Image 1 (cartoon, helix red, strand yellow):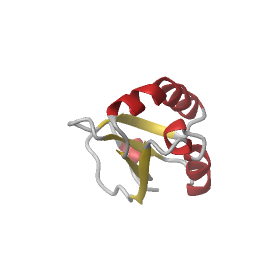
Image 2: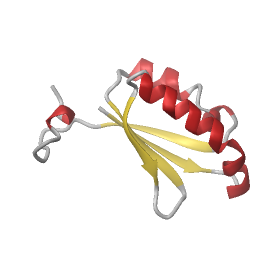
Image 3: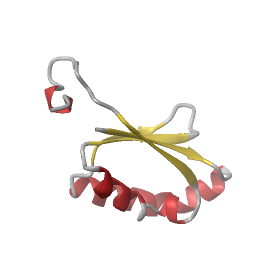
Image 4: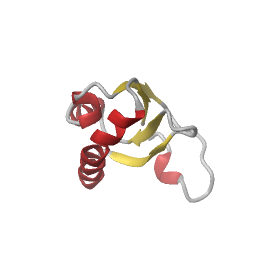
Length: 95
C-alpha cells in the first residue's frame, strides 16, 4: 500500500484555481480503483492519499493530476505495509 503526501508549494489562490480539475481527477482515480482514501491536511498545507494500486499505476495516475502537471504541489510517495488494523479495516492488510 502507498501513502502519498501532497504539500502545496504555491499560494492558496493558485491552489483554488486548480482545485476543481484536481477534484475531477481524484474522482476518476477513485473510479479506476487507484485510491481508497483521500483528504486535506489540517492545517490546509496539502493532502494525503492512500492507494492499494501497484506503483506504476499509482505514478501514472499522479502524473495526470492537475496539481502535479501545473506544479501546485510536491508529491511524496511512501510505501507502507499494514500488518495490524482495527476491526472493519482488514482490507488494508498487506497480503
